[in-house]
Amino acid sequence: MIAQPDNSRLKTELIIAGMIAFFMLVVMPILNAQGIISNFTINLWGKYLSYALLAISVDLLWGYTGLLSLGQALFFTLGGYMHGMYLMRMIGDLGQYQQPIPDFLVFLGWTELPNFWKPFSSFPFAFGMVLLVPGIVAGIFGFFAFRSRIKGVYFSILTQALTYAAAIMFFRNNLLLGGNNGFTDFKFILGFDILSATTQRWLYIATGVTLLGVYALCRWLSKTKFGLVQRAIRDGENRVLFSGYAAADYKLFVFVLSAMIASVAGALYVPQVGIINPGEMVPAKSLEAVVWVAVGGRGTLVGPIIGAIFINVLKSWAARAFPDLWLFLLGGLFILVVIFLPGGLVSLPERLRPVWAKIRSWFPSRAVAVTAPADSDSNPTKLN
Figure 1 (cartoon, one colour):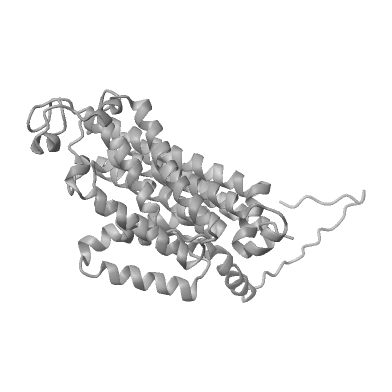
Figure 2 (cartoon, rainbow, N blue to C red; figure 1 turned 30 degrees about the vertical axis):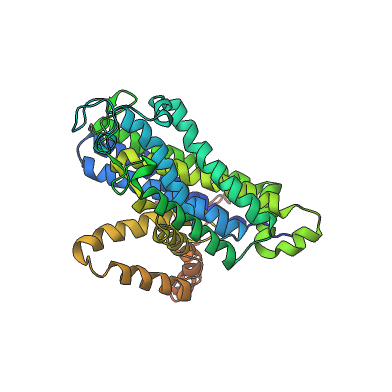
């Protein structure tokens, strides 16, 4: 029998998620519109929320299904490229060479747009590709991997190898996707100036709403029968197989779903950061996302959000204060969390509850009973 999640823990998680959502989706945009929060800050936090989406996709695999994928950065970058192709088409003839095709194609000697680029002038088509391309890649890879009963460290190594191979391919200029430089210098999105404060604010809100929707979807999924089987696969796949469930099909579905979530995160990341290149696809990026999940709290959904935001805020500070020590700080933080806080940051309230109860026991409350004299009618006398 699979144990249901602790209700007190779930209630704490929902409270934390609600507080984060209110602050991110209501407070910050209002403060930005009033000029209290700068456009740079709202843009930076949009990037953090995109990373939080990526962290949820990792947690859906690792925390809930027991599949440690080191290839989520691949799907994140694929989504960024699919959206980036649309944004590059919207530049028109406003590029450096003033030609109706992207500048890097002009540099490579092209005089007209390659055929596979042409449909990306349509935003609905590009959005469809954001979901379809990573979904197909994940579906094909997952089908062969899970049917072959590949799991554990071997699955992690294979996903890392897939990501590394894809990164090498995207670095090549003959792929006609920008080579080392990738895509940048975006001008418009859906007819709006992509660099304007209003557009960036709405992109930030769209990212926050998407994050909230994905969180709600994953939370609902975890409460269904599918979620129970999903966690059973994590805790004991052989028992699931002996119970008659097709574990490979469940894992394939989760793998494809997590790839699509990571891809949407990449698509939202690109217009806010203003660039996408193969550097986002290297295996180190996937490892970073794993650290976010571990620090925030694996298997909690809200934990990866906290972890992604916390670590990236810390990274932004460390990049200015201690640029040469960031990797040491990240590695040290990961080790400390694994040893002393295996449940991640999200488990702190639960861990601190006994400490708080012990502190309160040192100061017992002493109630003083005051008895009021009764009147002749035996009614209590009102005290002034």
